[in-house]
Length: 231
Ligand SMILES: [Zn+2]
Ligand SMILES: [Zn+2]
Image (cartoon, rainbow, N blue to C red):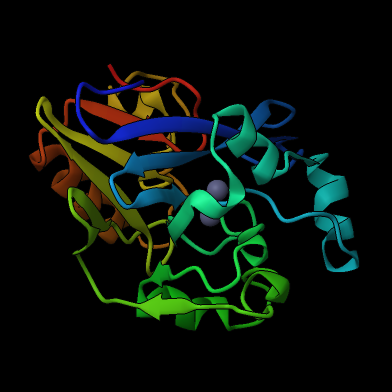
């Protein structure tokens, strides 16, 4: 997973769950993966994983048999200290991707305004991930480069303000897709693969985002719900 450049991308296993009986893949195991990008100015964190259990989540977590992995443990296992994290982006603000944001007070969290608006509607996410002491969300619309060689890349479709991350390396761009593509098999158009386009709330936007990602011609693609990266 390490590229031959100043930018290192490290996978962070952030928890597991089981799809419910009404889901697309009932009874199957699911997982949540975040990524840490080490660069000259610190560590850019892409997703903080599942929120710790709280009463608001009891029903949801019981249904999905959620097992939360502390992001600080995952970072420590990757050799990264808590205070090395200097900036964050969540692929989107559902509870499995931003759940531990509150562990990072005063760290800028880049968010698409459309996602911020959605997250502040009822039943979208946990409020504890949005409002916490030192919460420092930075709304930025569309593509932008929060650190040299690290680009936030707007990929709406699964959610209104979904975003991916592009890490430039001498070998070409590494794409951290988040949930803009659900799985390795979806990226390779493998029949029967877990495919997030099928139940995407905005399917045309989802398709346009996938086309944009393919046009990047990435050398590597990593996913928020699949441990297996492409190629
Ligand atoms: Zn989601
Ligand atoms: Zn998700």
